[in-house]
Length: 74
Image (cartoon, rainbow, N blue to C red; front, side, top):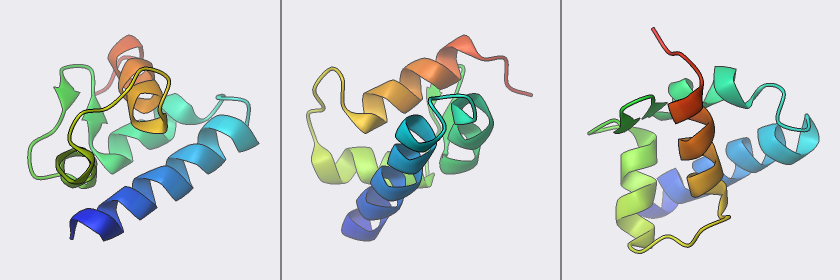
């Protein structure tokens, strides 16, 4: 599950961040499991983070986390 989640987060997240210039990032990040409180437990984002372990600044996961924490989510 971890590898698949990592691939999904990177493929979808990368496409949204770089393909749309970040315009759709606040809309897509919550679907992957990123929220204003951080990464939601049991989500695709959590599985990706568990697979990667220590994440570096500037990675796709960190960019999605930052975007979700700034954007208001219901």
